[in-house]
Image 1 (cartoon, rainbow, N blue to C red):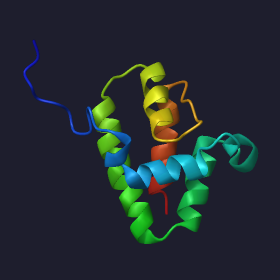
Image 2: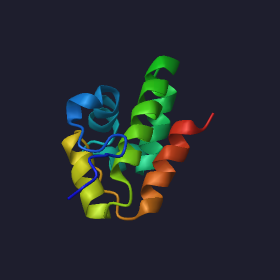
Image 3: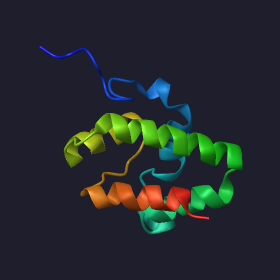
Length: 106
């Protein structure tokens, strides 16, 4: 039996992350590697294209989404990303770190 406490973002649906869903489907789509070279490259392109308000919304939702994943396997993380419209499938945790770093770069 669980304590009933959930991590932030745990158990949330795609509708709870509208900005992240827009980012994933718009930039981490099936052609992201051809267009941007990497997931981090896609995040940089998003940052270059988006308004500060949009960037901040994605950063905030990313933080909650990632916290909700905790120490999930990369397979579970890839499934969670697909639920939000991404074709991207992170293979290692460093893939998440590289996207996060690109989202926060100036």
